[in-house]
Length: 83
View 1 (cartoon, one colour):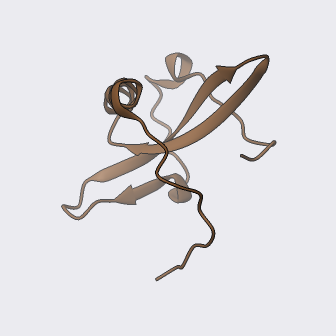
View 2 (cartoon, one colour; view 1 turned 90 degrees about the vertical axis):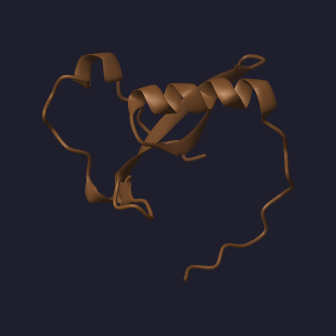
């Protein structure tokens, strides 16, 4: 994970009308906007981060709940191919 990643307090920003930068918004196959969210977790004395795409803050919370129940390691990534 990037050491220069900043995490924003969604409680403070939830009611603002500012939109995220374009790189943090995508359109799904149905034309709905999906947004990039930052996650944070603690392991031992360290704090780590991850990213997920979700339709809303509530959707992101539901995805984290599902991860708590069923997340598994699929394997190590070695390359990425852009289409």
